[in-house]
Image (cartoon, rainbow, N blue to C red; front, side, top):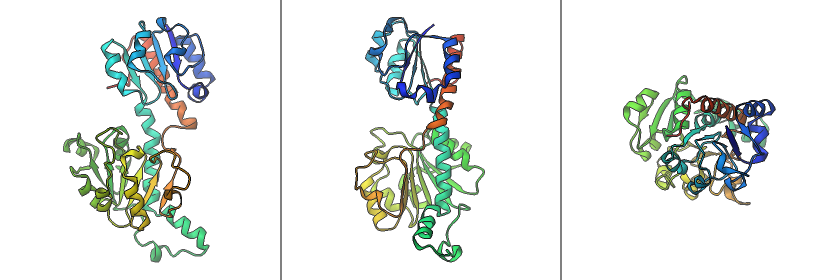
Length: 319
């Protein structure tokens, strides 16, 4: 079976180490190195399987150049715009979205825990003043126990975060217009159908909705204003979901705290106020799979290639 790697060539050894590459080439015939577009494939007409990921583009129009294509295995989150046109042609698609959700959920849980423990802000106080910190006197409301965590978006990642919070003594609220009370109950959370109402009850607000026209700016000035004094906003989704100017205003007033793995734009321009605000903690888009975590995505993709070659259904089909 002929296959092509459609991805940033520099990422190949991170996603598929030497052993994984050998296993892949034992399953399918990959006749050239990875390329970033269908136009870079020397003979696309005979390609039956695409193994695709970050750094490459493929659109519905590219399918005309791939008449033999029967499957696409995305080791990344996939390309939702391609799903319909591909499936209309009988092309099966797999996505590693669920695997990529794992490190994001792990990162989010760590940030929720550290936010509740005041770790970032206590560290800055400790290092700047270099003195004994009387925890009970100066950080009286610190701790995760009994807090309320609001999850915005019962997405793959959002659900995984809720599941990871099950064994912790916190109350979890979920906002998602497509979720039902039964969905939330199955997750062990409480569904709240008004985002501002959820924010008003949350000590920590964690964002996990997808970016689409209907969700842009959904964490609005109204939602941010509804958060209690001292609440923390965590964003590991997309910067466009947040009214960032409104967030900066709240942070400058000292009313809220923010942990932001994503911003708008991403990265921020030099000199942006978020860099210097003492109650903002920024990370450079670390939450998703990176480094050795990319091997997990490669393993998932390899298992899907094995299923495809064997004529079995994908374990992780695109919806």
